[in-house]
Image 1 (tube, rainbow, N blue to C red):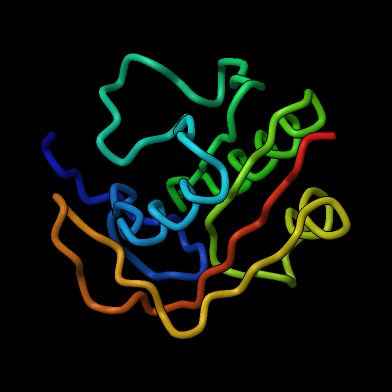
Image 2: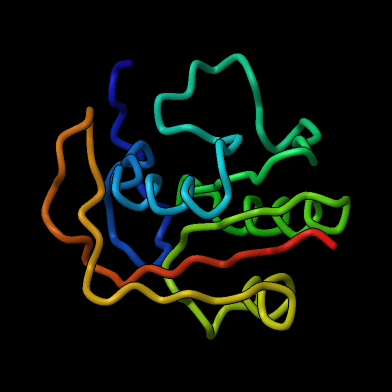
Length: 142
């Protein structure tokens, strides 16, 4: 896939790629706990499926490391799919001062904070530590 430079629209990080991939050790740890997961917004997205426009599976956990340029849309979709019966694991920066955090995450998801900064990957190669902390928001289906 060709990497496009996508400005993060003034969101807390000044610039960067929306195509950063989750560190493989994070995925491996989550797969031990949740099994094989569905990813509605893979960093190597083929452009054929819009994860915001489809229903996500309820028979396995859904893992979301959203493009930060559309953070609000993806957080709202995660909450919507959780209410529909999905287990959703969302990886985002802990922006507890935002409206989307209070409207969709706080009180609905288990919060797990990472010690230190994650090294996201680009084309499978780890980059420098992220310039922001990260957290997992685990929305568990009933």
